[in-house]
Image (cartoon, rainbow, N blue to C red):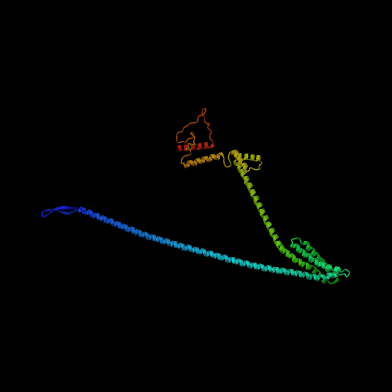
Length: 417
């Protein structure tokens, strides 16, 4: 604020009277208002920043709460999954334990059944053996009196030992057959001798019984002489077959039928393979014949040379090795290649390259000679230095180059028309 003074006379004395400048007052007022506005702006800015910080804090708190909720939910899910895995593992373990216990029970039950069956079989076998022994003894008791009567001689009482020798000899020899079988030695001759002694005793009983007694006594005692050793041998023979795992006649017949069926199937399979092989060889021979005909028609020079080469190498047919060598000898390349094919490929590649570069094929200065028409720039004939004068036809071009030059000339003539 600017204060000015104005002179004023009071009682004749000049006195300076203060006076305010309106402009200065306006400027002061403007400065005050600007300061107030700046202060208000700073207040509003501070309030906005405080509200923004508050909102940010609220948002951060909200985000943190969401993150905490997610972490808590994730932790609950992981715990639930862990509990589920533990429960599943416990269930599997319990199931495995139950299965193992059941298997053990089943095995124990099966073992008990097997043991019971084995005990029953052993008891039956013992009973069968005991009955066979007793039956042998009864048959011997029945057969001995007639044999003793047959051998009785008051003047030769020592002959009474013959019946005991016959009956007891059969018993002893059958025991020898059992011992041989247990030792895995041949036992058929033991059994043969036992049966021979039994039939001798039966013959004596039958002869003496018919002469001294009646037919019933003769037949009964003869049967007793055979039945006793026969039943005992049947028991022992069955035990040996069971021990050695020998098959019955039904099992042998079934095994023989299975072997015959397998042999028939094998023979049929071999015949089928032979027919397939023969058909494949026939088809290969026909295909080879067709291939030879095509090669002879399409490549006569190579085919003729291949035949000569095969004969020289001692081959009856033109093999692939012979054909490859003959083709290289005649054409200079392996099969499926030749000079003509290479030229055609080069020309096709040149056309493709020209099409990619969007230029005509005859515009290539690297491949077109100066005498080939169709070049955009004027022809410049600059032959190489050589002796003598160059004449027409002294330059020889390949068939592909001549064909290309002819095509280029035709295209140039069509463009001019």
